[in-house]
Image 1 (tube, helix red, strand yellow):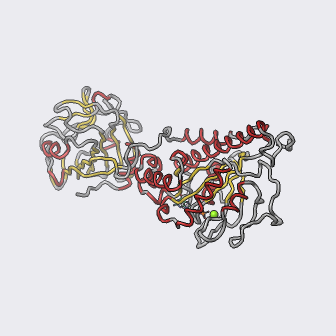
Image 2: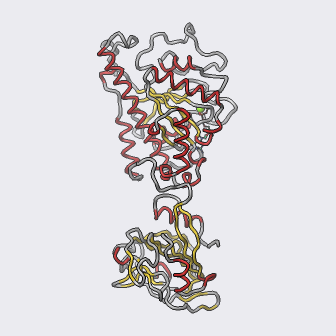
Image 3: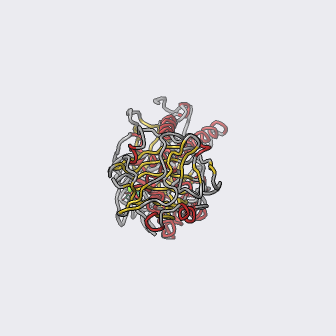
Length: 479
Ligand SMILES: Nc1nc2c(ncn2[C@@H]2O[C@H](COP(=O)(O)OP(=O)(O)OP(=O)(O)O)[C@@H](O)[C@H]2O)c(=O)[nH]1
Ligand SMILES: [Mg+2]
């Protein structure tokens, strides 16, 4: 049975309820089931969380949400600190207001003689009907009562007339059960702090504050992005730059092609809103293809800093030792300090086995050099609709959790080295969710780069011959 509640209203209710996308199932409709308290209780008792939606004669839509079941306490009150009243439309105009419960002891009232009741004690805030409602011309006359602000905080309105226009003739009352959407488990597979603007700002500050210790004599942490064609490597560079700059930027060209759109080794500097430059280089590379492009030897040269910046990869012929552009004695600054593998989450099972083998052998090469590695899983919005609607559900999405398991098994990544991200691609406005995911990943990447460089320094101090390419004591003091 389909109801009248619009998708946009469901999205608004989901945001108010929190914890991701919900499945709304119509349990009761006054027009279809009849307007008696008995019918309401028959259809709606013991159903878990419900939302009651009232549509009145003059185009106002309002109601109440409770996470508690009806009739847990027959003829009594049920506490529910998550309960709220709301309005969705006023006189046909979208008007979104949430009125949270203030007196939790009187959140909802279940009584065999009443339909749904919110509030009590000093007054029922919203008591829709008792007995049978009179109906004429397809309109039902609400016969309960509305007490303003008795147990709910009515911010933004001055009395109930601002919600129901003083018009108690209703075209419909619907009750929906509100359950966790399949695919969203509510069981977090990774704990994160509460997502809000403050978290985004804190992450932004942290990321900007990470810089190499001056005694290391390196200007930037060098991060390389590596992965199959079209995985979203260049998009991640643009996303990070946009997040930090606070507006959309396009540094790297992105797009779709049979072969890699990016053809060079391009290190990007990232600037913040205040024009300060972050102490890292995000290095974009040509996409991995089964029989073309980077091979393990060329990748090892890249890791060790032998490939100059802006080098145009020759897909047919990898760089070689005597190549005129080959950097013979790279310093620690030229080396890669963290490898970021980038995979399109929706393509994990469809990857060419030769590309998978290449990634594995690149991982082995990086591991031999003790370079930390993380995996970015892009396009989570394509993989899972619920996540696309609300990015915050990514860490409770069973579909994404499954992908993380699959990929960590396939490529041997520890699960906590795998970061789901959503790159900016069609948006017209920056989004806190996109920013938070990108910044969470970037922060960890920078920490790993920091660890690697610190380890290199410790090794060079303990065993000066081991790190022959770089002499920390005589390195330039230009930083
Ligand atoms: N929906 C969605 N699209 C994305 C995401 N990341 C990248 N894209 C799109 O995927 C396509 C390829 O992205 P690129 O960033 O060019 O991929 P790349 O890894 O740099 O590819 P090559 O340079 O060709 O190797 C573009 O059309 C992007 O807009 C994402 O997280 N979500
Ligand atoms: Mg690219």
